[in-house]
Every structure is written in structure tokens, then in C-alpha cells.
Amino acid sequence: STKSLREKNQALTLSYQNLEETQSQLIQSEKMAALGQLVAGIAHEINNPLGAIQASADNTEMALQATLADLPYLHQHLNIEQQEQFFEILRQSLSTKVVNNSTKADRALKRELTKKLTAYDIEDARDLADLLVEMGIHNNIETFIPLLKFERGEWALQLAYNLHCASTNSQIIRLAVNRASKTVFALKSYARYGHDGEKQPVCLNEGIETVLEIYHNQLKYNIELVCDFQPIPEFLGYPDQLMQVWSNLIHNAVQAMGNQGTLTIATSLEGDEVNVTITDTGSGISSEVQEKIFNAFFTTKRIGEGSGLGLHITKKVVDQHQGRIDFDSRPGHTKFTVWLPFVPSDLASHASKAQSMASSVA
Image (tube, rainbow, N blue to C red; front, side, top):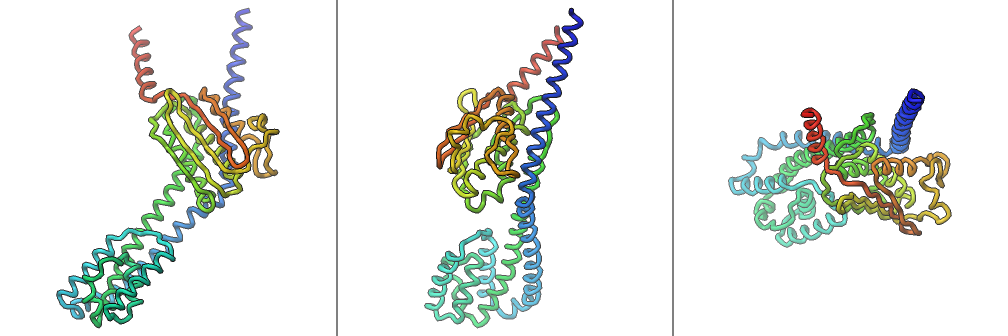
């Protein structure tokens, strides 16, 4: 009867809604489980910049105290020409950006500069060379030779160095704050739980970069990261669910490589499809299990390392987008490829407005 059919349809609709809600909760629980495994590394990522901020603040205070003690004597110890050289050294040093040069490179620069200063019969050439290199000044030093040869030359250079340190510490603090902010933003974006079933604009490259930020601690030591991100306009999809796709694939790649190797991620727009490839140089997926990797609760990992839901959820999310996922694997090379339909968010918005207007006219 019509009533019986209507009741069955209502029951099917309710079951479908419950299934969607269960899938969303499953995705969220998997995200939180992965996040739990990363907590130690993320804490390290935040503690590092906090430590840098504390150390830089302490160094700035010491540098300013030393500067305030010597600054009143600047005009007494240096003549006009020497003061001009002093401020030129200071100007050049303050324009130097913080760079993490290798100790080996620094030593080579200091040795070379020590030889130059020694050739000018400058006393304490090695100490002066150390200060100059630390300040980022090691080329075209001939202008400063008269000041450096002066009996109070080292005093003047030390004063400039203290002011330089205050500036450098400010740069370090800004970099550290930016580093911590990126980690916190990535955490908020990753942990976000979207309840709305409506598709939203997807910024594909930003989503992948957010996941990479979460995994930064695992990637920064022994994994070479190669990214080839092509410009991709926003398109309609489910951003939170897609972020879980990239997280699952990157996490599996890192584990497959034993935390060392090369991880290559590429994005491109090919016709009416978005293409994402994630390639690792790990052990590969054996032919015996390749047919099972998308099955729910199937895993080759040890207890506590995986639930067997990661790739299952990944395929469900790709299917939800009417996309497809494939892989090619052999020892030393595994590449997962995801294709997603490209529906520009602006075109979809225009189409929705047009449909709404047509409905209101009708």
C-alpha cells in the first residue's frame, strides 16, 4: 500500500542519515586517534619556539644592559669619522636577516676574515673576525679598517654587536611566534568537526599543507619532502573529510618508510578533475594484501599502530566525492593517486542562485 511504501521510504531515509552520521563520527574518531599518536611531536613543535622566545628575551635583556653601560661613551671614544664607520657597521648588521648557517660554513668565513684582518696588522684579528661574521659582515671590510685598527676598535665593534643581538633576537622571536601559530592553526583546522552535510569550497593545497604542518616533527629529520603543488582554484567538496584522506595517506607513507626516505606530493588540475599523488620510497605493499587494503579493519601494522580503518575511510570519502583512488606499489615505490571531480565553487554558487531565482519567479 501507499502508506506501507511511505513508511519504508522513511525508514530507509532514517537509516541512511544514521549511516552518514556514523561515518562522520568514525572519521572524527580516526582523526582524534591519529592526533593522539602525534601529541608528543606536536608538543615538541610548540615547546621549541617557546624555548627560543625565552632564550631570545633573556639575550635581549643582557645585550641591552651591556649597551646602556657603554653607549654614553660613544662620542668620547670615537671621532666623527670613526662614528660614521661605527654606524655603517651597525646599519649593515641590522639589515642582516637571521640565517641558520652551518657551523662549518661559519668557521670557513671566520678563518678567511681573520687572514684579511691579520694582513692589515690588526690586533685580536680572530676575535674581531668572530664578531663580524656573527653580525653578517664579511665582505668589503676595507671601509672599516681604520676603525678596527683603532685602539678602541674592539670596544666599538662589541657595542655594535650588542645592538645587533637585540635586533636578531627580535627576529628570532617573530619567527618562533609564527612557527607556533602555524602549528596551533593546523591543529585547529585538523581537529575541526564539520557536521554540515553541504559541500563547501575546498582549498586543496592549503589542506595538504595543514596536514604536513601536523606531521612536521615526523618529517623534518630523515624524510626528504618534495612538493609539486600546481595552482588549483577552489572547488566544491568536503574539506574536513579530505583533510583526513591526506592525513591517512601521508601517515601510511611515513610508517612504510620507517621514518626515513623521500615523500613526494603533487597536485594538478587535469581537465575536469583534480589529481593528487602521494609517493613514498618505503617497503611497498605486498601483492598478497593489495586487494584487501581498503577493507574495513584490515591492517598489517602491529597492535596499537593502526585500526585498519584509515584506507577504508579514505576510500569512503573519495567515493563520497564521486572520485576514485588507485595505487601502484612495489618495493621502494608506492604511489597513491586520488582523482576528484572539479566543480568550481563560484560556478556552483551562481548556479544555485539562478535556480533559486527561477523557483521564486515560478
